[in-house]
Amino acid sequence: MTIKLEKIVPWGRNLDEYISMFDLTPEEKKFKIIDCAAGPSSFNYEMTFERYNVISCDPIYKFNADEISQRIQATSQNIIDQIKANYDTFVWQNLQSPENLLKVRMAAMEKFLLDFPNGFQEKRYLTAELPKLPFDNHRFDLALCSHFLFLYSEHLSA
Image (cartoon, rainbow, N blue to C red; front, side, top):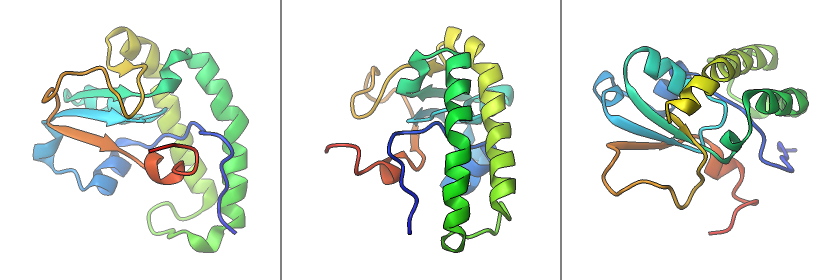
């Protein structure tokens, strides 16, 4: 059995996970970064706190923090239940268990939710979606896109 997501769900990661997932070096953290399909990740908040330059784009940013929080609450248990049902298909090296995964993800998403209103005003969070983003060519040094394209390939067209 595999995890089945009927809809795109909000599920955010933190800075440490981004560093590990993308093998980001200290030098690359200094780049102008765009995080595409960023969702409720705390990456932007944590990078901004460390005085780095990140813009995050996602269609979910058309909603306010309370609405995003409600969606997180409505979907997070289903995700964890599916992860538990597929426990043996995961590598638990960094996150140890589904319960710890939920704790880490919820902490990241809480940071995002606290930062989102100010970050949206500061234009660090922009309502935009792949494949067309509202930026000039060469504006960013590095583009990141987490698991979005892999998780939702069945939901998206070329």
